[in-house]
Amino acid sequence: METIRLANVDRTGLHDLFQQLLPAPYGRNLDALHDSLSCLSTTLTIELDEASLLATLGDRYYDSLLRMLRDTAEENSKLTISVL
Image 1 (spheres, rainbow, N blue to C red):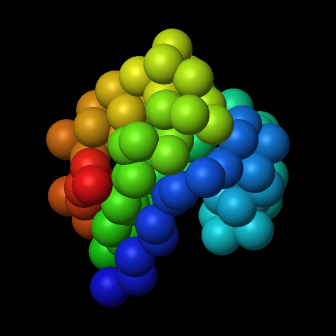
Image 2: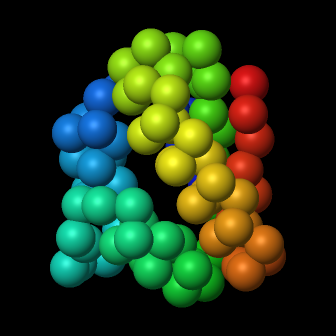
């Protein structure tokens, strides 16, 4: 099982990270991230450092990210989301 910890990244850094980890093509937006994570065949845990992400992403984008990740985890049992 792989674990990714998201902390102190802005939107560009967030999508840079996932672009490196996910199969190409990756569209560098939340819809593309949802699509890629929905198709995971191996287990993945994403840990979100809420305080630092709120500071770097802002409330609205963080909320959209968290909502999308939780929805995707409900669709794909290989994905686990943890808020720290």
